[in-house]
Length: 349
Image (cartoon, rainbow, N blue to C red):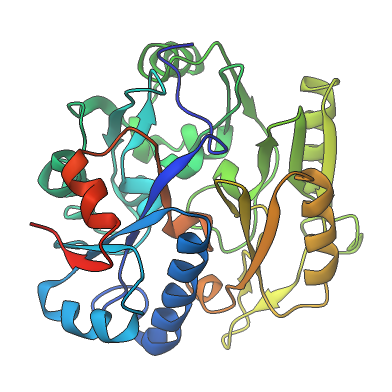
């Protein structure tokens, strides 16, 4: 499938991040968030991938002080609203020997938040890093809303796609055709169930259901909490997975119960992991369910190294590890960018 969106488990040469600063969501937890990012960068580098780090010019010196000299990080000066790179950074499609970047419009998950700067990130900053020209799809969609496998089977959710603040009354048939044309998918499954309280994205698929490379599906379930408010919806989601994918092995994750200081439920999901080369970077939260989640993920990805990262700070702003990352497959970036990524911590020139 030469046109298809490239699955996350294909080899990556870099991961895009956006550094937390005092005008982002992370202001109340800024130092803790930055420490989490530094730890994440180290995990990404350990997978042999570099990091493209969007950041303000005035933060570069501080970032350089925080990172080891041999870290593979390219500092890219940029203006942005927030750090949810999964939803505004480009997707990668096409021939895996020469992938091309594809962007959708980003409007802050249905005009919930100002995303005017984030919506310009690809055209202003990231496109110049790529070998192939950027392609723009003229609808609103986020990377976290889309999941694909090697057969070109795309997953998404009704609650996200059919929020009228995204694309008005765009029909299911229209979405399917757009995804087929722009992402090369052969089939699209749109789930009707599953949502985590506190999730601003209207139920992104990357908090709920993920493919594995070996005909498996990782599902954020709630079987460990039969009295939880999520139990009915997540059980219905598991049933949908079994109905639509009878030949897949389901790996059911436990559900943690986390609340912020105001008593609001936080959408802590173990399904919000990042596959980076032969590792799976797994969010954990300092909760009793962490150990079981690691065990489930090792069963789901027996050929991968499971690398847990404490994301308790990230979930305070209702997101997690996958939400702040966007992988870049090999052969996407220019030779100059690759050279810089292998030259320690450098500023883009």
